[in-house]
Image 1 (cartoon, rainbow, N blue to C red):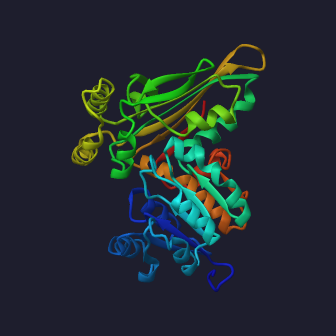
Image 2 (cartoon, rainbow, N blue to C red; image 1 turned 90 degrees about the vertical axis):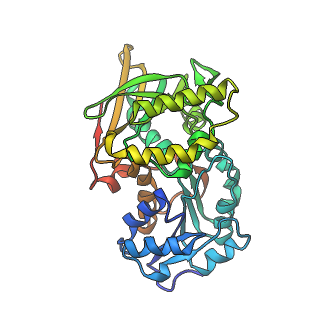
Length: 373
């Protein structure tokens, strides 16, 4: 059953005391027409976050994503929108999304797992039958990256390649994010290159990219993200789609690159054991590492005049505000729902659902600047 006030929407943030969950909850906590619930398996942690961001104690709830009774819990809480932030999503199934569908509430997640986001369409029939929207990958990729491509692609007579990358600042992401990243270090990654599917390896293919000041030049390595799959279908004219990422610390990045090389050479089985200690080390060295980070999306092809054309868009963040960027899509989409702008019914990856301006609007109070081509 829904909340007694017809105009009040109830948002449940699953993993609401995690790295991204608490940022989304804090941003939306004061929005009119919205009741925010902080949810997770540990109610004490949920309660700490709820109190810190000014919510009532009853807005901290214990919700176990693996509980078979999850749909009943969502109904009892009157949830209209569920935002799933409890990663890592690599290897995770669609239990939470299915529960949301069964409960009749809209579902968003911040998944960065390639197979997870690309496969969400398998729930399309169920979502349509229940009249709900199920959106996966409401994050920097593919939500913001696709918005950038959609903005600049019309200026090309022929779009040949889409290159993307992210360089972090000093602020380390949560352990779940680190585990997700490390899950494919040194592992084969399939990507589109010059019209053919080729193999590279996670966090290898070392290269450098120059971001606008004050970020500067950063080392980047290959990453496995949803865009490599989603963009190949969404932008079929593009013959090359790549993504690289890097850390603020050069030493830290090269350490991960070296360990990934050992995984590729089968000296190490995986980097899973390094996730927790390296996450701790990154927090220790945060004060002496750059607080600047950036993102780029570069399109290349032919312009209307038939000449070669390249457009490279950047986003730069300072004061360790970069980790807020992945939260922009969920905040913007929830606000659309609350404002009575329902999203299309069905299940899909979060590509083409927001403009760049819509995505960045919730981040306008942060030290995050767009640098157009």
